[in-house]
Image (cartoon, rainbow, N blue to C red; front, side, top):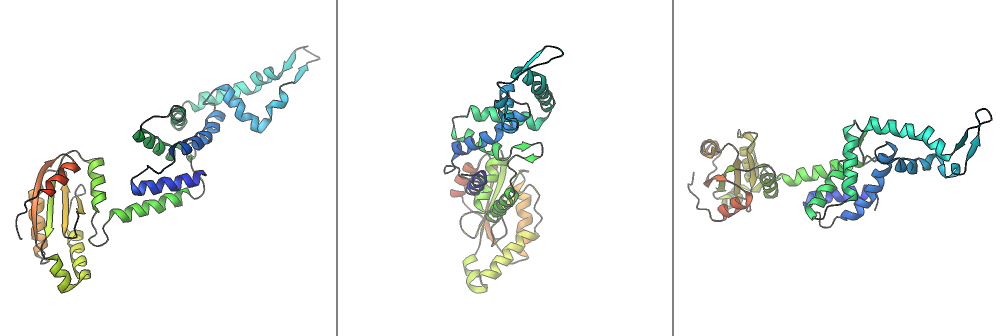
Length: 290
């Protein structure tokens, strides 16, 4: 596979949140070969590595039998003399200058990880992410012509799949991902809207979806609040980091009254994980028919 194909495959896996089908070691082999000349020619590896990459441009092999004796000084110049008089000072200069640049030192550290790859699946996926986002002096190392187009295409898909098209709130997988990645303790409000099926039959799906979407869109949630659908179409969960779910719920009850919407609800306090939230909601005892 070409690097472009690997990157497309990477974003497909990001979208699914599953890297089990990604050819990790094949990618690492190709990426290591890409990284090697970048580091070697910038003096970030050994002098031997520097010469090995220079050979592509100078054909140093032809100089190995070179020998010249000056008629003035009677000094003999050999292949080794040329290396140390011409190429070694350049190597040392590049090495010293680039050792001060964080992108170059980060690349060298990444190269070391590729040479001594971790064993566990999670560590390999983390290494893959480092490679994809590796930065060179001039930008992303994987900076072929359509990488931004590929990146934007899959980021747009992620955004689309993270947002419920009917209600305009987060999807359940997006809520799960956010809780697992960002939160350590939170309050949650579980809502079960009343008579949604009857409203769908009476007023139509478009009216119901528009009404609920506008209800959430016009309510003043805080930037740290998360709102998403749960399993069925009438179940919503609101997550708040500020551990003050009651005032938020009371405001939302009043907000819904103006739109002739009602729901049963339950508050879960100081929840520690998504798994705990899932269990609490499964064993819920809802209150109210506001």
